[in-house]
Amino acid sequence: MRGYRVFTWSDYRFPHPQNLIQHLSHNGFKTITIIDPGVKYEPEGHYTIFDQGLEQDYFVRKPNGQLFHGYVWPDKAVFPDFLNPQVQKWWGECHQTLTDMGIAGIWNDMNEPALDDRPFGDKGTKITFPLDCLQGPLEEQATHAETHNLYGLMMAKSCAEALVKLRPQERSFVLTRSGFAGIQRWSSVWMGDNHSIWEHLETSLPMLCNMGLSGVAFVGCDIGGFAGNATAELFARWMQMGVLYPLMRGHSALSTAQHEPWVFGEKVEQICREYLELRYRLLPYLYTLFWEATQTGAPILRPLFYHYPNDSKTYTLSDQVLLGSAILAAPIYRPGVECRAVYLPEGIWYDWWTGKSYSGSQYILAEAPLERMPLYVKAGSIIPLQPVMQYVDEKPIDCLTFKVFPGTGEGILYEDDGHSFEYVQGIYATTKYRIYQENQELIIEIEPRQGQWTPPNREIIIDVVGVGEQRFQDQGQGKQLQFSLLKN
Image: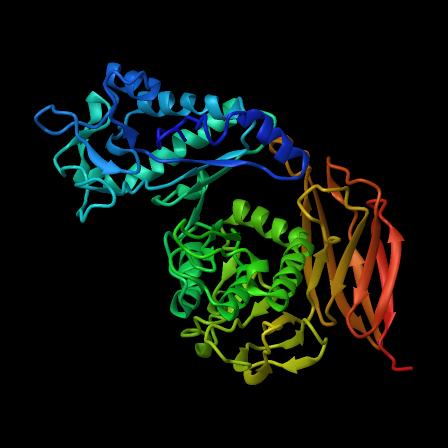
């Protein structure tokens, strides 16, 4: 931005933003720009956003009618009244200056709103709007004491609704720091400014699980920590855990040391690469979980008691987590730890890395050198995996692997084109599958693909852990495969 003026570009740093965004796009990057609610107070500064808001009386005022201001990144700033539908519409239209450049989404920050009583850098005090400020349209105004929690929600709503209109052919990414009940309809959420300390790595799991249980499935925490400097070990362990986050992103403050994977040495860089590649391979499984969240409200990241409510041992386990119903992770969240106790609920569980099976309803001691996060899959699960890519849609998925863990179970794969809104008109596909054992054979049944979306030509690999694999060309037809469980 030009001096932190929202909806502007710095002429000095970004003289040709559209060319930059196009160049990034050709290399697989989608550009997301940040927007704060604080509008720089700049009378006679020829700043369009301020001038329009002031002319239309769109900014929050004190009870005595004076314009309210606080201090944020642009120094003295005023704040739109997002409880007013007219303000929401105007604010949404302001995003066109960014979408015309080719941006793919918006990151809404500081929208609690966060502000000080003095310029940033001074020893100021965090403040909020006067609690008796009136917000909203004249016919249904309410005080800030009543509406404070809605401020970030309404900002995200105005942004999301505008992006649908401004980018009607492509889904947009929206992220917010603040929200309220229902925020999942408009935006993803991250948990704010954490620190590069082990305690914040540990705390991230229960935080994100609680958000998921509250209906907000698309959530994440800053990998490596926002404030402070991560050690190599902390960063590696955080990246491993971050693979599980529905929203996976690294982020750190300008004042910290560099937090790119390669700055921590070759070993940590390789660990990060391996787990990032695992994340990309798991995208079909994750995408199906996202679809399930839209249909049922089910969280993507789940505490163990979500699926095992009759097992009291799961009630206080906050350092293990389920990704969907099939994958159980037990991350390492303390320095110097290379093994840990893992509780496996009822059933049979397979080690993701070795294929070794364990009986559930017991604790096991898991080996966890720096290269490994303990990861398990429940028997009877089928995990769809795609090839490793450098970015989503780098190339058509010409091979889909179903990693099968022997047992009894069923599942579903959801697919669509990944970028348009055609799924709203039913242009998507679902494939149901089940697995069971008969005598000494493992039977895998795949139902005919349902829906109006057709994937590109691809090979299907059915990889049964510890048994073998079979391959066939995907025609969308039903299929039954048998695998002998007899040892040679």
